[in-house]
Image (tube, rainbow, N blue to C red):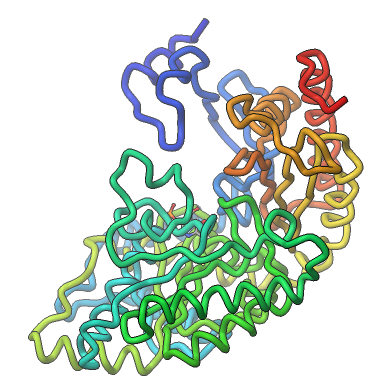
Length: 460
Ligand code: PLP
């Protein structure tokens, strides 16, 4: 029986990433307020936000400094654009700060309102650059199966998940997907992580050669895959991949939308994964999600090519009304100031051993095949049989069951492709709250196990 507010919701809203028929029966969970790592629903029930919203509210809820930064900027200058030679202080300062923080040489910053727009922009910049460089055929982009890069037409095409392509007539032309770096599922029997990484680099090389290196412009990767199930590549994966990219002059786009700003215990995920991208996309934790803002950070050589093409054409014909929105930029600047002042990344590093140990312990649970983890992010893969790694029929939605039981236990987590439950708490989570998160998740797994046993779903 839906409440009045739930009824009004399902009568009016299309919810992203939702079964739009099923929600008419269940109604949504309607949240009202938050403080720290906790959010409260309209009935006042508290939930530990184990996903930092959507991998983004890094500083948690109720951060008054961010509220103040937004309201101060709104009073001063709520909006001005940066098209056609206009600018404003917050955008300038934020671009300077991002350049200073970047782990690879970055020359210029382009602002967007989301991660999807950032990755769309990356593709357009690569195409624009290659036209400027007189390589009009070098336009294909290689992404990876299970990679997630967003939902606009171009970024959804980069995303390597069927759910983002089916019935949307995607991917568009010129996008290829190479093997996912998922050792647990894709390694040959007895294949070491090192050998697996070598094979994946060979796969990539074979794909580039089959397409023709003169047609392959760029490769895009998240340091650690997020929405694809939190997949942590083998240690030597990126160095091997990078050798292939260099060999064929393929530009490397780093998608740091989840891993940017401390998630893996380093400012950027690239640093934790020995990844050396040419350009980077960031969003989410850039403003701790208090304002929608993303950015594309590009190297000097790309900038030179893009700038000369814009001079040739008379204009760089790309930009969003809200690119570098002053309120979003002011909030992002304050967020970065807090990360630095409060040593947030260092404090994340101190919490990682506890988080990883609690995560690893879940592998003893009868339903858990693999508890993948890196920094403060994890993906718990649910299996029917641990020995054979057999999964449940996806229609049964086991990970979704875990999420529902977790919600009943006052914990918000998420289920994603591959029957995995993801965890990505605010970076400010305390050690006691980390224990609380895993205690609640363990209870949710136990309740799911009871349910699966009652339904006779488990291996004999
Ligand atoms: N890239 C990655 C790695 C992401 O995880 C996401 C969103 O989860 C995106 C891009 C898309 O960002 P947005 O949802 O802000 O468009």
